[in-house]
Each structure stands twice: as C-alpha cells, then as structure tokens.
Image 1 (cartoon, helix red, strand yellow):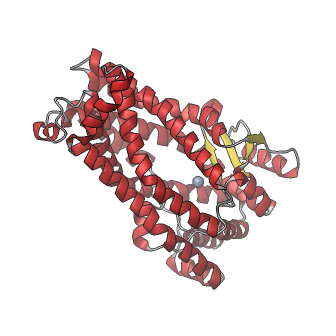
Image 2 (cartoon, helix red, strand yellow):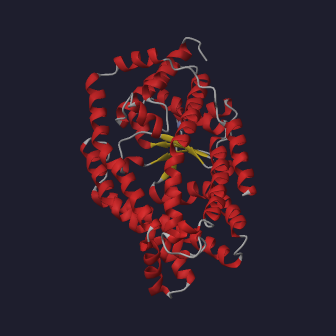
Image 3 (cartoon, helix red, strand yellow):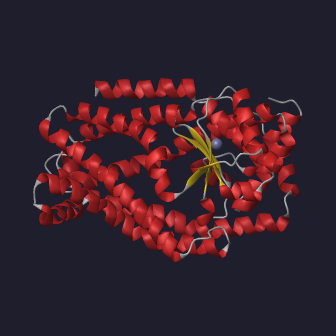
Length: 411
Ligand SMILES: [Zn+2]
C-alpha cells in the first residue's frame, strides 16, 4: 500500500513537471474561420465517414469490455484457462501461457467482425487500399506478435508469483516497468519491420534539408526513413519512435507522394519537436511507472475475498484468475483513457508550436494541416465529447488556428 502510494505520488509529480500545461493559443474564432474556408463537400464527406465508423468503433470497445467482464467476473474465464492448459500438460505453466492467451484470443475473436466492418467502410471511402488477404495477414501478424510478447509476459509474471508468493508484487512491478522500457527500445527495430518495409529517404534536396533542419535544431536523429504505408492505406503520417540509439524519424511514402516538399519539412519539424522534448522517453517513463502501479493495485485487489469469489479462484496470483486481471486492467484502461488523451493532445500542441518556431512558416504549416485532414478524411472539427474522450491530437481546425495565432505573433 505504501509502495503504491509512493508510485502514485511519483506519477503525479512527474506528470505535473512534464506535461506542457501551457497551451499555445488557437482561438475559437480562428478555428471557425479555418473551418469556413474548407470545402463544404469535403467536410460533409469526412463527417459521414466518421458517422459510419462510430457504431463499429464504440461497439468494439463495448463488446471487448463486456467479454472481459464476463470472463473475469464469472467462473467462465477460470474454466477456459483450465481447459486451454489441459492439452499442454495441465500444469501451471500451461495454464499461465495457453490459458492466458486463450482468454485474450476470445476477446480478440469476438471483436473481429466489428473490425472487418470498419475495414469495409475504410475501403469504400478510399482510405484503405488493402485487400481482404492483406487485412487478414496483418491481423494474423498482430496476433502472433501479441502472442509472443503476451506469452512471455504471462510466463514471467506467474513464475515470479510462484517463486516469490509474498513478494511477487514488488518483482512484478519492477518487471512490468522493465518490460515497458524494453518494448520502447525493441518495438521500432523488431516489430515495426514485421508490418512495414523501411528504407532510408533517398538522397536529394529534401533529405538534405531535413538533415540540415535537425542539425539546426540540435536534435540527434539516427536516420530519416520512409515506410511503405501505401501497401495498406492512402492516409499520410509521420512519427518518431525509439529513443537514444534507436531513435528515428519515419515518414509514410504516402506523405511524400501527396504533399509538397515544404509541407513534408513542416511535418518533420513537428516530429523533431517530439524528439527535442524527449516525448517518447517521457511517455515510456510514465508508462513504466503506471504499469508498476497497476501490478501493485492488482495485488491489493487480491485481498478482496468477495472479488475472488466471483470467478471462483483462491488467489489473484493463480493463472486461473487471468480473466479477472484482464477485466480489471481493461476497465482501468477505459477510465484512464481521457486523461491519457488530454496529455497527448497537449504534447502534440507543443510539437506543433515547435514546428512553427523551427520553420517560421505558418502558411505552409496551415496548408500541411489542411492536406493531412483532407487526405486522412479526418473530421476537421469533431464533436466536443468525442474530442475530449478520445482525440490524441488537436483537431485540424485547432492546428490551423494555432498557425494563424502564431502568424500574428501570439505565443
Ligand atoms: Zn506528433
């Protein structure tokens, strides 16, 4: 309880210190002005697209939550774990790995029809360029990656529980934090290539300009890579991943095709902002502390006898209670979601401000945002409740308004 308290306080202090509380100005009047200048039919089409996606997206969240609650708070999950462990030796290792994976798989499988429905809509609106074959292969790859990482995590967790029955919460917390840090290093180099091919951006004026800008910004970047995103989508994007020796800037090939070189510079300037402010590192540290706190919270929940009675397990440390763990973490994830979105929106707004300052070119920044919104068919000014609950980035009109405010000298 004491350790959990310390972790939570550390999280709050870190968050208070690291979250950019100052939001660069993006006046609503500028937002409405920007919105009025967007072609009406385009805005309508983007809104229609999102209206069609909504039932599938929220339905999927609801179904996943419901399934997790049923598997975790009734004896069904525990029964499934026993059943899945039987063909593999019927011991605790088989139950931990195959039972855990079976519970996750059930939740994944029942949400597949809703994901397929969203795919149909994305294809109809021309966002996805993926055939059903490619879509299924992507899904299988994602499940395979999840099974390997999840299987190892489950095995590690239940091994610790078994050999340190009264101290597993401490080892588990350290292990969960270490796993988050490890994944942050490893995902870009090992997992991303499973889904996309990356090549260094070809030599030429654009590459030279990007490298020169990174130098000017004093941001060490290992490389600028181009991902073959066009194999599955028309959407354009760029991101920075990894930190230290694995940090790289990745640009979608679709962005190079769709956008003017100046706009690509603007996008990369935004990504350099993330690198400069160590946003990946900060996210990793907060994620690591958060997962350590979750492990300890789960341990404390294990003393609630009435909770253990629901699935009919004797302790939260036995593999048969994995459904309960998943139910609690799914619920916690949903509750924490809006706070997480709030933080990422602030971080994204700061990276936008960095891009504006670094390029000194708000006009190109605004045209880039307009293009990003158009190509990606994003709702430029989404409903406030949806934006508040789920949006990871400021809206298109907010970002355009930030450029207009910057151009007037407002910071
Ligand atoms: Zn960003």
